[in-house]
Length: 609
Image (cartoon, rainbow, N blue to C red):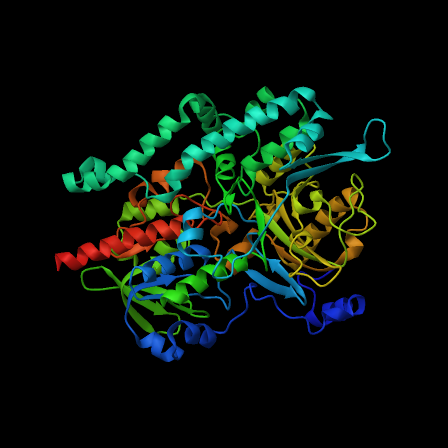
C-alpha cells in the first residue's frame, strides 16, 4: 500500500514535482485563483486604510464568516448603502468554497468542488463575470466505469451521461433499450419539478408565526412568500404525484419502477444521497435530488462547471464585488461573542483578542449551532429555542480527499488517448463502487454502527481536465468525495493520522481496481474526514450542508421552525449561511435573502426611532 502523511511535507513534494516537471518553478498564480491575502492587504483594498482604523469604526452590519454566503450578504448590504464589515477566522476567505495550494503547484477546491447552484440573480446583480468569475462548463455529467469484462469485449463496460442526447441514449441502451427511452421522460419530469421549486430559493419561507399570531401588517408582508408557494404548487401540477413520491418514498423504490439497469439506477441514486446520511432505501431522500437539478451556468439549465482557479474563484469574485461597493473584509479575526445592548439587541461583536466592534446588526455565516450556542449569550435566547437548536441533525458521512497527481488517470473501461488529451469522462463526476444500488446500501449500513465498509462510494472529479490553471503542466488535481464514513468511529477509535492514512490507502486501492497506476501517480494528498471538516471549516459534525437536508429541516423548518426567516430571537441578529433556507450548496441564496430582509428590518427600526 502507498503510505503518505495526511499532508506530505512541502519540501518533499516540491522536490518530487520539480523532478518531474521543472517548469513548475516560478509559475504564476492565475488572477482568478483565491490568493491567501493577508489581513492588511484585504483591509487596504476594501477600506483604503489600516486594519486598526477598520476595527475602531462602527458599522451598520457585521458579518461573521467570509464564506460565499457571508460575502454575498456583504455585497448586497453594502450595495444598499449599509457600511459592512466581514470578519473571517481563517487566513483565507471562502469558507467551504475555497481554493488552497496544499501541495506546491497544485490548487485544490478543498471542500466544495463543482458549481451549478449559484443563483442566476446573484451572478447578474453582482456582475460576477466582470469581477473575475470564469467557468468551464462540463460536457459530461456522470461517468461510471464498471468492474469485470463486458460481453464481447476484453474491456470492462462503462456508462457516460452527457449533454449529447444521442450519445447518452446509446450509452444507456447498451444496458437497456427501455431505460434509454425512459431516461429522458424521467429527466424531464424531475427537471420540471426542480424548475417549479426554484423560485422558492430566492425569498424567505412563509413565516408561520406571522400567519398565526402576527398582525394584519405582518400577514400582508408574508403575501409575496405565500404567492410564490402557491405558484410553485400550480407549476408542479400534473407532476404532483411524482413530487410527493420523491419526498416520501425510498429512491430505490422510485428508480426500480422506472428502470431495470443497475448502473443507471446507481448513478441516479447518488444524486439523492450525496453528502447525506441516507441510503437509496431511506424514505424521503428525494429532496436532495431536486436540490441538484435546480442549477444553471451562464443561462445553460442543469449544467455543472469547474470555476477557473478552483471554487475559491467564486468566493473571490463575490468578494471583489463587495469590495467594489466599499465593504471591508478582514481575515484572521475570529469572533468570540456577539455583543448585546441593555435591551438585549445585537450591537456588535467581541473578537477572541478582546477587541470590541460595534454595529447596528450582526449576520452570522456560521452554522446555527455555532451561532446560537457558542457565540450568542445564552440568557438572551428562550430555553425552547436552545433545545430546538441542540436537536438539529448534523450527521455527516463524508470524507473528502484532495489528490495531486503527476498524470491523467487512465481507466480500464475507457483508456486514455495517445495524445494525453482528457476525454469527456474525465470532465464528469466519476462514480466508483456504484455498480448497483445494493452496493451503495452495503457501504451505508456499517456507517450506522461507526464502521467503514471496505468498498466505499467514491465520487471523483478531475477539474484540471478543463481548468489548466490549477496544476503544473502534465499534472492533474483529483477530488474524491467519499462516503460513508462516521464522525464517531466504533470501538473508541479516533480519526488520527494513522486512521486517516489507513482510510485513504483503502480508497486508493479501490480506485486502482478501475484505474491501474493511480496510486503510483499520487504526488500528495489532503484527507478530511468529518472531524477535520468541522475543525478546519467550522462545519458542525462535518456536515457540508450546515445541517441535514431532511424534510423536517428544510423551508420553514430550517434551521428551526421558530427562526426560519433568517431572524433569530435576538433582535438585530440574523443567520445568513447554509443553515438557513434554502440550505446547502454553493448557491448564495441564504446570503442574498438574509441581507435583503435585514436591510428592510434596519430601515423599519430607523423609522420607528
